[in-house]
Length: 392
Image 1 (cartoon, helix red, strand yellow):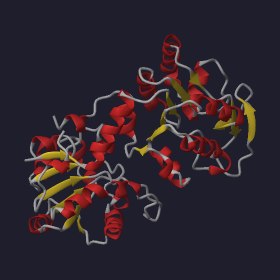
Image 2 (image 1 turned 180 degrees about the horizontal axis):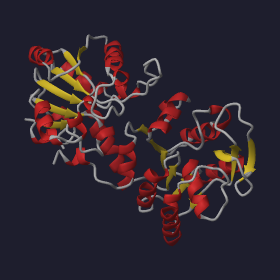
Image 3 (image 1 turned 30 degrees about the vertical axis):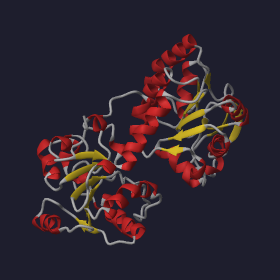
């Protein structure tokens, strides 16, 4: 795929697809603007080349209709503050007023379109909608790695109609890093898979058996594997539909002689709350109505030992309920400290994991943080990446 640095953007009208799907609180305040900041190299390159910039993104899942809670207006304000430059907001690029704004945009100016997912045609990968977007510009730039696993109009079909299509600095960098880590890592490569969504991790774990030397499985994902091993996990979250997949992964790992590490003890409680009556239990002795919600000290020491000789670490998914830090976030904090202090190359991805690293103030100690949540997992699973393939 072409890189933006090899394209003449000077005084050209550029359509820049970003992934500014940032977390917000109930008052619509942005709680983490790292995705905005990661797009700055591409934006500054376009500004330096005096391009007329039209930015587009999505936010949340409005399902094809307008939702004021998912408007990109707060993002536009934050971007303007970061750049120290006026960013004009366009609430509907298909309206007469919107078309006027686009027609009149001058070199050096920035126009930001409203949430593309307010249009049902976006997620349907509608070709007419994609052509409408392509007709807005001389050059199309995709810098949204978080959408690389989607075949949506603004990242896939648009490449059929754009005069010139290329990757921004972030998209190119993300894809390049992930390829290198998976295809030519320094060994031993230790993969850590945690979090709550078991179904989305099964395919990644199966594919990682072709690359990893060791795999640590934690979080609610581990609950399902431990249940598959015949351990009574009491009231812990289990994905029963993933039991057979977990058994298959353990069988393949045994055949390939790849060690799998699971929690041996846990912090468990009857409810997920900071005032929960919690206790520390061996994984075989969880009380009937308790849930495993974080790893214990024995598990921590086991995982620490597994990481001791690692030269490459891939991590996606927290070890406990990090959002309820007391008493279920200390496992993630302790492991994050170990991972970021190692001399290994560390690659971290997944929304919850990245949020935890940022909250702990450890992002500067990570070798590379991926902005892709689902895209990161899809890559680890060896799945097709439509938005990348679209360039070809």
